[in-house]
Image (cartoon, rainbow, N blue to C red):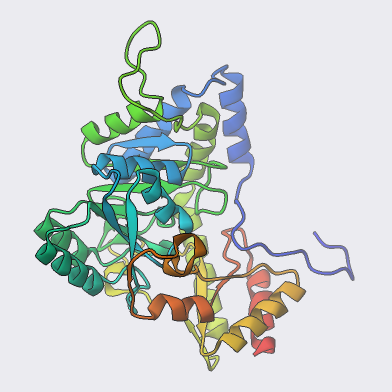
Length: 383
């Protein structure tokens, strides 16, 4: 708490929301003696994630590890092409390169800011005519809102191309009532420190069959064969989540509904404060992201706004920084990143416009109404 007369405390974009429940869970795991990577907390966390999603799940060291294993599960390898959302964090595209494949970037639609299904359709049709279909499509559920799987699922099925759902930002969201992560052929979550729940670092892969998750679990534990000595017939990875971090994850998962409710309430407060401000708009909520039977259509992970001009965005960002309030531009599209210079892309200008004019506002689930009012006042004053 700030002392009387002192400056307000800094506000972070999306800090972890942890307390006594998480502390007790970690101490329970520590006192059990299961300090080694595997253990009962890990098995329980996977079981509870499966109960939430309905799909078999394997807990991993990061969302990036889950992406890598998801691509391997889809059969992606050296020399392949993978269609990837351009408007995303670099991890999505980086994982493609781990397999030796090449990312081909697809721009966003205006309805949800997620991968544009029309552009995917155009790309698949053109490639089919040339006989060079991609090995997979990765759709990202951006800022906690699912992509247009009404279009993407039948489209990928028509061409026989696996669909990977990068739901790193979307745990707790639903598409027409169906949980994020279960909308493609394989899905994944991230539990990084800024996500809606955290295990400090961590992630998960989920799939409709245990054949996929068993294979992922095998590869994630250095592909060790069931022998008394160390026997290996495949190249594996050190990708498993630790037992201690799984205990933290279990505590966080028990609070998921509260986190979603809090972040959506913060978004609603921002809309009330800023909704009538000329030259400013919010991320649209697509029809497929409507709430169904009490299940949240989008999880409210980050409140994002777009300004009419880049100058307005930059002025607001500078004012927030001066007030010790963290904000951040929307994702820089992958087709603009220097590391992917020369990569092919099918673009329509949407993600470039959003990057240049968009901003993420503080959205952590522990943010109180006074703090949101403070942010809103800074934005209004700057404009």
